[in-house]
Length: 222
Image (cartoon, rainbow, N blue to C red; front, top):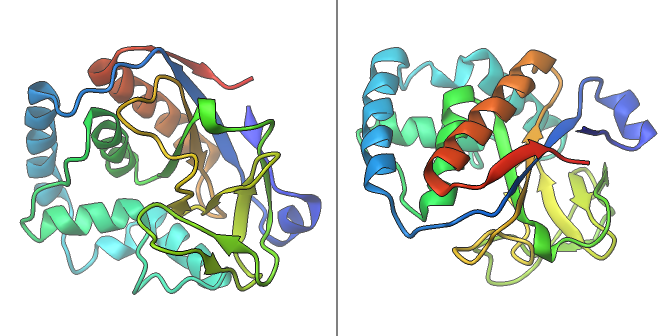
């Protein structure tokens, strides 16, 4: 099931939508030897496939960069997530290790070059909506010490009570996934220039990697 923006935003950004994927009954380990080995193998593949100097021009990554500029985010300072992870690998650094769940969906994002957001379903209230931010609206993202005030250009996702993401680059602290998370809602984030089949691919890859290394069952969100 897609999450589509409010009508005015949809008119401004044709192709702006996200697909929703639920994964239930997860078992989130601090780490996984199997996942670590698989990540190393894929990192070697990325180093043979991409070049640091030109990775930003990969078509899907370029689409996110172009969208970032249009919503007031400088992608030379705040890089799209998949690009940032790929650049890390191409610089010879290891992929970050958080826990098996976060590591698995980070890998899915790199594999597909598609941005992913993840929310603990138990912390969400009601349905999600995508809209333009309001100037001065506060947002507390993961890793932030204090809320930032939005400019009003950003695209945001909210539930019935609060903002849960600045789309498609930062998730809110209040609804983040943790090792105690058992049910997750993923947003597979599209922007103009990303074809629908790329989002479908990302749904499949995310479901496969998360359930392979964290168990659980997956399906399209209702």
